[in-house]
Image 1 (cartoon, rainbow, N blue to C red):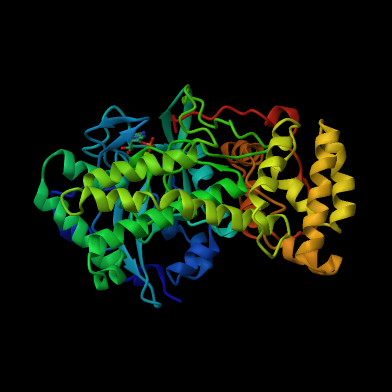
Image 2: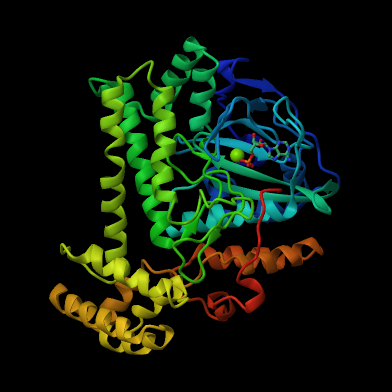
Length: 487
Ligand code: AMP
Ligand code: MG
C-alpha cells in the first residue's frame, strides 16, 4: 500500500509535447468534500481505501493540491459528432493530471473531469456538475463489475462552487482512470489538420505503449487497427447483451483501447426496447440502442480514414469487415450463456431474436427476465415468466423451443443451472431511477445513498441481503427520465 504522496509518475503523453496537449492547472472547487470513492479503483493505484476519507484526498482531487511530479495537460482532439466533423475539440473541462504506474507495472492515466477552463473549452465553463459526476462514477464502476471494458472512476469530489446549467447546480470533479485517454478523435485531429509527423508520432506512441504485441506482426499498424476493431466489436457486443446504451457515440468519445468511455446521458434498459434513445438531444435516434452496433463500425471507419497514411485502403476495409462477425460471435456467446446454454446450435441466433421481439412488444424488464429465467428449471421458469408477456401464444411457442433446446443442451441439476445463469445474469443494474434517487440525496448533502448504490452494483451477480429495493423494476416516475447532454 502506498500513501497518497507516494504515487509514481511517468508522464508519457505529456512528453509528446505541446502539439498534443497544453499545460493547464486545475481550478480548485470551493469547499471540496468526498462524495464517494471506489475501493477497487484505489487498489489499482495501490492506495489504501481509508485514505479517501482524509482531507488531503479531497484537496488533491478537488483541484487544490498537486503532486510535484504531476504534469496537468489538456489534450487536443477532434471528432465526428452526430455524423458531422467538428475540427477542434479537446479536453474542455478535464485534465490529464499525469500517468501513474502501480506495483504490478500497470500505467493508469489520472484524468480529472470538471477541473476548469482550458484552451479547448469553447463555449463551456470547464465544469462538471455533481449529478453527471455521480452518474459517470457509478456507471464506470458498475460496468466494470459486469465485466464490460470501461474507464474506471476513483472518486467524486463535491463542492459548494455554483455552476449554471438549466438551473444553478454545484460543481464536482470525478477522477477517471484508464490506461490511456487517447480517442479516435486524436487521430482524426492530426489527420484533418494535415500534420503527418504528429499523426505518425501518435500512432507510434499508441503502438508502443498500448499494442506492443502488434510490433511483432509484419504490418504493425494494420495489426493494431485490427485489434482495435476486435476490441470495439467485443465491447459493443457486451453493451448489447447487457442493455447498455451509451448515448453519445461520437468518435471523440471512442477510446483507442476499446473501453467504454466518456459517459453522458447513458442508460441501462429497463423494459427491453431495441429502439430506445437515452439521449434526450438525439432527435434522430442516431445512437439508439440497436444503432450502437452499426455506429460502432461507422466510428471505426472514421478512425480508418485517419490511418490511411499508414495502411492501404484495401487492408483497412478488410479489417473493418471483421467487425460484424466478431461482434456477432461475442454477442451470441454471451446471449447463449444468459439463456443458460453451454453448447452452440445454428438456430440459437433465431431463438435470441424471437425472444427479444416478444420482449419488445410486452414491456418486459430486460435484466429481471434473465435473472428469473435462471431461478429454477427451464420449465418452471418459463411458466412463471409467461404472465409478463402480452403475446401469450407467441411466448408459449418460444418457450417450447427453449425447453427443447435446454433439453438438448444436456442434463444438469436446477442448482447447477441457477449457479451458471446467475453468474452471467445480474440482479442489480444501474437503473436511471436508482441513480436519480442517489443524486437527489447527494444534492441535499447526503452521500450515503450514492455509496450504498455503488456497493450494491459492485457485486451485481450476487444476491445481497436487505437490498431487494435495488432489484426492482422502476416506479412509474422513473421509467422515462430525460437525460440531456448538459452535464
Ligand atoms: P462530451 O459531449 O461531454 O463528450 O463533450 C464534447 C466536447 O465538449 C468535449 O471537447 C468536452 O471537453 C467539451 N465540453 C463538454 N462540457 C463542457 C464544459 N462544461 N466546459 C467546457 N467544455 C466542455
Ligand atoms: Mg466527450
